[in-house]
Amino acid sequence: MKQSINIILSGGGTGGHIYPAISIANELKEKYPDANFLFVGARDRMEMEKVPQAGYEIKGLWISGLQRKLTLKNLAFPFKLFSSFFNAFKIIKKFKPTIVVGTGGFASGPTLFMANRLGVKTVIQEQNSYPGITNKLLSKKATKICVAYDGLERFFPAEKIIKTGNPVRQDLLEIEDKREEAFIHFGLKKEKKTLVVIGGSLGARAINNLIKKHINWLVENNIQVIWQTGKLYYDEFKKYDELEGVQTHAFLNRMDLTYAAADVLISRAGASSISELCLVGKPVIFIPSPNVAEDHQTKNALSVVTKNAALLLKESELEMFQTMFLELINDAKLQQKLSENIKALALPNATKDIVSEIEKLIIS
Image (tube, rainbow, N blue to C red):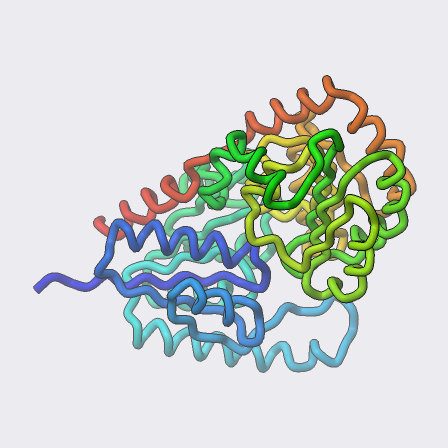
């Protein structure tokens, strides 16, 4: 009797962990249409909504991050950790996975830890240029580690590392042909330059405040703005739609058309965002969040900026925005150089390459 293939994927907290996991699952489903899939996420996080929308079952663990400041929430952390280990153990014993894949986020730690303890093959998909403590610990027992950057043998066993890149939306591969469609979709004027502002799926307070401060200046300089505020901030900033050439969005569903419309982008420096922007090949100013663990975003951004493939504007230096933006928007040669250099960093076959590595483990 043929043994069924059961695959657990664990990742969440932000779109940067959820969408890669869904991309991997979709690719695996094409290869193994009869396989059983189960996602494991953190209760009350966005994966509990996004994963079922993508057509997959998900179980939630009671887990959250340890706060860096002294807070009452930290008192519950040991109980959450024990609960999540216990429930991850139960899920794995019942589902009997052939393989467990972790894409990062609170729930993937306990899930992969328990899979390792129970002798199940595990794959870590490390998205950042500088891994967090959890993945460093998990790497000791992991079967394979798929990475997006060079130099991670400093943190992981070198013999387990495969450089694949991060999974990205496949509709971003051909955006050059979509510029006309993008202008119609957003109602843009061809004679104006377009700035696209992306602060992540939930939004970014510092970026929103920066654009608010300079929005009149941008309009006066004949710049049209597609501004993704994030759903947390949309109600606060939607009034700027009244300005000529400014449009605010809580969320942008057609990212292919968004990128196609852009002359210049302002973005956070999450790992998935960077992978997408390398594929897209447009000039970008990164404003990393300083509030993430291990200062991942600054390290991610620097891995691109040091290759002359993007510009970096730290939150502590936002007063430099107008100077940096004008220098970029008025310098066609600089735009071209950044575009060519960031495009050279793209790894467009990441999802297929990750799934190929997972497949080797399934059939071995």
